[in-house]
Image (tube, rainbow over all chains, first blue to last red; front, side, top):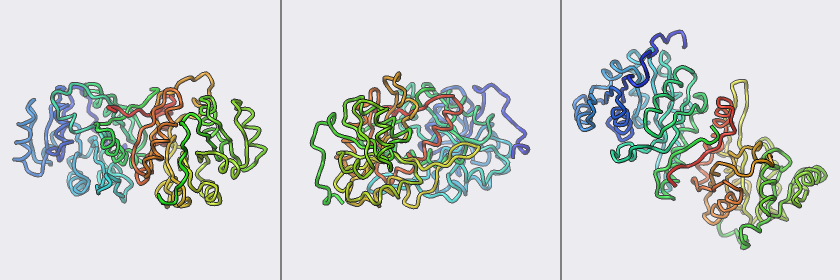
Length: 226
Length: 226
């Protein structure tokens, strides 16, 4: 897998272009807004190019809108921000465009019922491992699971008080995504293990939903002693 | 299950007696030390009464040592701090002694190999749900998964910088365990969901192991915005 990866972004982190696949949802729009505001070239991808363009224009900051395939081709680093239901169907046909790139997966496979959120079983173990199975020529990194879309999208929120946990099996790729996380004011990117330990990070979002309900908060996580 | 629970500790939280089953291991000894230092009556339980007494005497602070069954009978709140392998075999025969009591489960079902720690599958979903299945007349609360035994056992460490995530299906029981967590200086007990969302909290310990390796730390977790 390492051998097939040939193009590592060499640019300084602040100039790396980012595409958000399925980026018209709250999480994708929120992250796109933050990275665009931090000065990155940002593309919103969607099944519908028209919808992508509409959402992009509303975000401002020169965000572009494209069909998912074009967005995946154009950007240096690609972020999958789709609901889990469409995750595999989105990524599988984009394997050629994503070959040699870092694919950042921030998908939380969760179900909801009257008692709140709970983790959905994933045959591959986690959404990120599913992505890795579908994209053998990409480096898959998992990150940005726990950022509140509400806070991301609120232009009054200047800084966010949380660590982004970054998981992956390739050190250069996790280092880069940690640096990208740090581009959001207040956020620190923290390495938190290999992809085989990603299921619980995705599932932890269900606990944050419980915490948000109990405490009427937009809870995040900080790692202490580092 | 609620109906069968008749004895709720009515005492102020600071006088609640605590028993640590399998309390001769690092996590049990560490927690026992902290609660004894905070003024709680504390019992170390072990399969061997003699070993329990030896460990108890080394901890000081009037800690007592007993066989697990006697410890479970004597204390108001009982904490299971055994390795996962012996978890079910320890708890099942103690169901009569634990009936009507709160059983706090802090067991992390983890395996280790040359790449670090990883979660073990648990048929009931999590160690805490296993305990709940074995102890239908007790209220099972999950907590204290992420506290570093090294820090707990270090008498020079006065205060610990972490939140203890507390999970359970009975509000009075989780409230009490949150208050108990707060008896350790620096620690805050945070409600983090029902037992069905406990597997990922137990498994998250594997990520903390990864973080500790990468950053040479004794990492803990804080929840932000609450």
